Length: 347
Image (cartoon, helix red, strand yellow):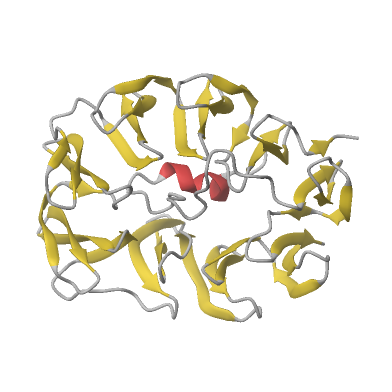
């Protein structure tokens, strides 16, 4: 099986560090891009919406275009091309490279991630275990640490600016998960950790009284108190009761949030009503009207009514961006559109 560690990061960290959030938000009828990554056998190129090849299938892997550039892999190295197929950033990144957002792209050397600009300059050194895309000048990242057995594990989640500076307010143990102009902050007294919220100026707008907290999304933040989850707004009003029965919840996207109970996931609305039953093994966020879900080791996509729009047949599926989602089948990746059209073929 293909190692999916880096691909599943957007789904597995409960504090939403890796959530896609609203960076790629479009309406539910968003048009397909002019150039679509297309896999023919083991080689990748780009086609139009009618599957006519525009850039030849000569790459080992390819990502979607963003801000005029696309990451492509050649001879085990990643670089970037423009829409004419011209190499803009040389193939020097061994492990992986992601899309550009807010002028910067995440790239991976050996085990660590950092960020480059569109000239290919490494403006933030490769030192992070994981990352979120830059948004409003900030990105959420996590650092490595050594385990007792000599391995590595994520040890600290934090927020950085575009110069790589850690956003740090002296009175707090940790500052992270920036979104909608607000940071989550943590303070610790011994082993007693409490979470709250501050604005960009460092002003505490919601007291540190929660046992855990996620960043704001669509005006609401998920918070945990007395081992149960709920949501608050920016005025500290508990929109959905803090005494919910759920074991876990994640941020709202397109009006719905994922919720977990007894290891099964579904979706709730902003009144706390279950709108899609908690029966799935895992659920992604809603993006462009659809959400990826996993059941019995297979992935597919639902609409907001809970209808399976794309049958659960894939081994893995990412969320939709710009009308496309990356899926895995038979140890190979490819892209599909919201009609389920597959932009790949096996020879």
